[in-house]
Image (cartoon, rainbow over all chains, first blue to last red; front, side, top):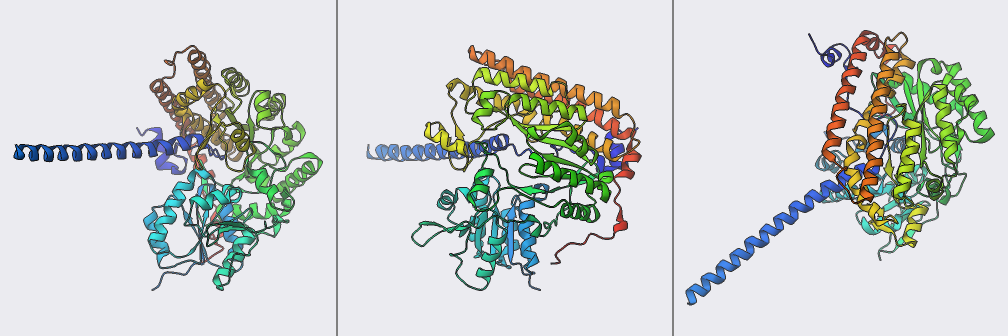
Amino acid sequence: MPTPDETIRDVAPLWRWGGRGPIWDPIDMEYKLADLVQAELTVARLETGASLYRSLAEGFAKAAQIMARSQSAG
Amino acid sequence: MPPPRIDVALVGYQDQGNLGMGYLAAVLQRRGFIVELIEVRDDPAEIAARLTDRQPHIVGFSLIFQAFLPQFRQLARRLRDAGITSHFTIGGHFASLCHDELLAHFPEIDSVVRYEGEETLLVLLERLKSGEDFRDIAGIAYADEGGRVVATEARPLIADLDTLPFPYRPNEADRIGGFPTLPVLASRGCVRRCSFCSIHTFYRTAPGKVVRVRKPAKLIEEMLELERYHQVRVFLFQDDDFPLWAAVGRRWAAELAERLHESGLADRTIWKISCRAEYVTSDMFAMLRDAGLFLVYMGIESGVEAGLEVLKKEMTVAQNIAAVETLKQLGVAFRYGFMLFDPSSTFVSIRENIGFLRRIAGDGSAAAAFSRMLPYGGTPIREQLAREGRLRGDLTRPDYVFIDPRLNDYHRLLTQVVRPWLHGEGLSYQLDYALDELDTICRLVPGVEGTVAYRSALRALTSESNDRLFHLVEQSSHAFEAGDRSLLDVNAARAYCASVGARLVERRNRFIVDNIYLLRDASRFDHSAGPVISPQLH
């Protein structure tokens, strides 16, 4: 027994539910903007995270160098 | 074989056919130029690859909202990096009104085409093609060698819209259910001066008559062409304000209705308009309904007098309610724009506004929808907020702070919670789509069974969803004022909307399946008119 969606797909595919928005023009910037901002924030967070790790890595490397120098000097 | 030559590439959003780009392209094509329309969301590398070998004289960016500026700039940079040396120009409301800010932030741009661009773009192309200087053309702005922004005199608005060719429409029409739908324009311009809107500034800054209305006969000619070549059954009038104002508007509407009947379009097609609520009168809208009008979108925007005043709507709450009630009595569907948050908002006005929304949409005749007013470039309210020291954000994301600072936090948290209803594919929009689809079926497919029961079920679902959203705002705003944020629960909202959405699709599909052969036959293309003839052959 096909599901209603399968029946529609097989008999009249143009009538499949598309999960679409309304047919007038709701360019609702607030919500589109929210997506945009969210995406940019995610990128910014990733970049900040990456830069933090880079700084930490550089810091550890420098610390290791200093320690190595001080050990060899000692 | 070398790639086909093009003179102009127009880049922008292609949603709903993009009439603005369609008109620009058609005017250029009429003079023999080759134009290609490009979807801005396509992969930039792919767009660059399409243009690199063809080096059009102009790449024109159609910017509909300033929020998209970073996206357009990124693409422009990619095109330059790919070695595209074309003249880059840009148009649209924001570009026209804030050309200096835009040129300062968008150095890849060579010129801005301001206000109505059809004639200016044509002259620009002719100048560039013949190697002449373009900097004295009326209706443009550019940065000179020293980086100083120069704006030439504004080009007058097009006096007679019927001198324009019909828009170029190379893309397949969108559909509502099985029926193709395309946008059309009956007029341009708006005489009102709403404080949040840049349309009146756009039309009033350029010389010429602000509102221009097409002749009904030409409109019918275009609609018949769209019906024949694109099988359009649903027309979406995208006018700034459908021209029904005063006696002249009523006469125009009567002629349009008469010609829709004469041409047979009233029997075969339906249409939607956007207009001010004050135009809605029982006699005129009954006449329009009988000529195919099935849906009216109104920018109601506020349910309290103070909000209407701040927004300079020049309307009253009572007028808005009367318009909605008239449409309900006539059996014409309505949708609305509503700014729950505006610069005058308080916790009390938020709840009053929800009370208004309950009154117009509590019965499920339309899904609950609202937004926050944003101070776009070129709007009077942006200037006012700047004077008050409340303007925030930046060029691409303008914003402001509320008078009550607690409302800033409340709005930020509420936005996340109401997203399952109000984002692009949220529950409210799904419900409205289902209601629109049912109206379309009732008007275009005779003999469909079960419409009364399905409509009743849809309205019950919509009413239930609306009530849940209204209740959420009312209760959470009270609680937030008392320091309690616990009612702003995103997960509960998501779960509720997912559950109602599933019920909606299940009920909708059952209705479609019950009528599936009738609907299949009704939406089959009629090829008797012959093949689709594109107005341009590449």
